[in-house]
Structure formats: C-alpha cells, structure tokens
Image (cartoon, rainbow, N blue to C red; front, side):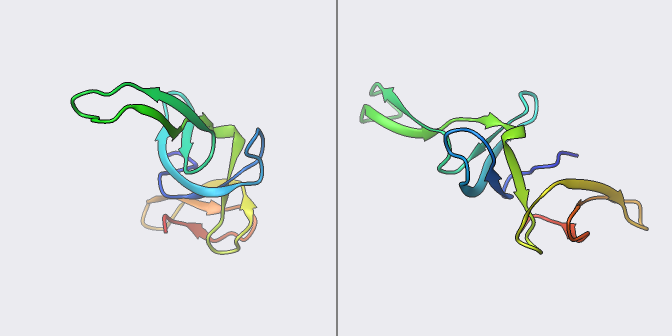
Length: 106
C-alpha cells in the first residue's frame, strides 16, 4: 500500500513549484514519482501525427519525486505524514499522524 494515491490532494514542499497545492493525476510506483496537476509544467514540441492533427508547442505536467510532496489531510486540512494501521476486520488503512483520523480518497 502506497502513502500517496491518485486523487489525493498534496502540497509540494521543494523545488520550483514549492507551496502549490494540487491533486495527484498519476502515481508511478516503480520510479517513486507522481504526476501532480499544474506542477512541473514543461513545454513539449509536438509534431503533427495521424492521432494528433495539430502540431506545435504544448504544455504538460512531468513527474516529480514522491519525496517532494506531502499529503494534505482531508479532515484537519494540514500537511501531514501518513501512517498505516489495521482495523478490527483486518483491513489495512492509511491514517493522518497529526489528527489520527483515517484518510480515504475524496
């Protein structure tokens, strides 16, 4: 189970986009990277193809390392570390280390 999942709201804690809050679009677990909306935007020169009719310069988000983001708890609205615990029925869940509440995808 990973600490950050698709759809979580995160805060960027280092780099050129430090301080931005946004949603996670994609998680790349093998590379330990995440793609966050409106963070690490780069310009790509796209050539026209059969699938993409128009070429030109497009802007797209690139992955950043997972250690550069912190989850924002949906309950206490603070940046927090994530812990794991098992419930009585045996399911493993993520929880906020600041407020102790269970964190689920919103």
